[in-house]
Image 1 (cartoon, one colour):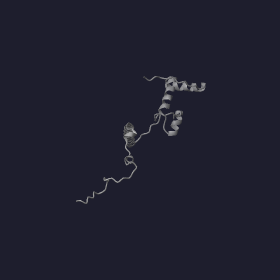
Image 2: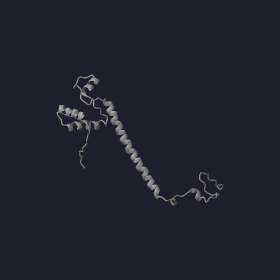
Image 3: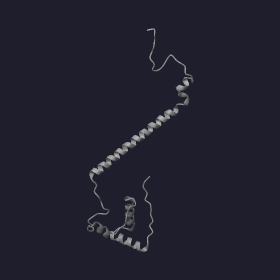
Image 4: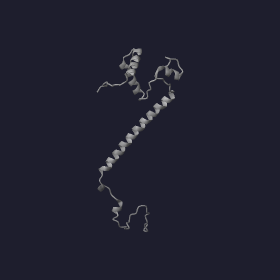
Length: 147
């Protein structure tokens, strides 16, 4: 099944519509492309996008207009990336071990379910409830006076 594009409708005031049209003309793109870019940004940043005029971005960062790309980028140390990858591999390994353990427990339960209660022998029932002396004792020493 292939990806199908879906249609999203936006309802904006006339004033905002004119502003958006101006942005589209300034960027030399269609109005639909403006909305697609906005939706793509929303998806990429998990809905955490704030639309701010470009001059306010430059004022807050103290940089000249056009010197920094948008959205801002941050460098991450390679050690952090390696540690993150190591932890992901370890988590994957632990998930695999957990799955194996679950399968083993399921297998043991299925084997246990195969046996009926009749197949099990209770040692107390073998004694017959009576405490008779038997010539065989576990753990007792052999005493024979004839030797």
